[in-house]
Length: 69
Image (cartoon, rainbow, N blue to C red):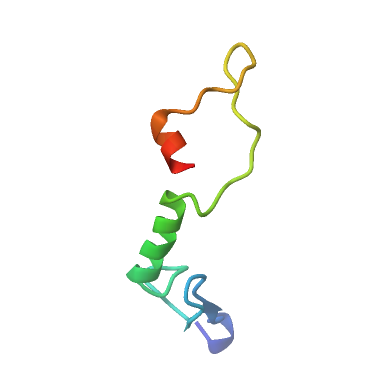
């Protein structure tokens, strides 16, 4: 592979430049884990229609969900 084909990218977490990484698109396991933690704690949200039950009502929040709000 020539140099032109090896386009340098940046890690989406720490913005370090990287050419090849075992943890692609991240530069390290640490940055991959930071991103996973953000997903697990709800920092990233995929938009979508609100859920409804069979009656067309919004489902009730569980006690745990209420505690998180």
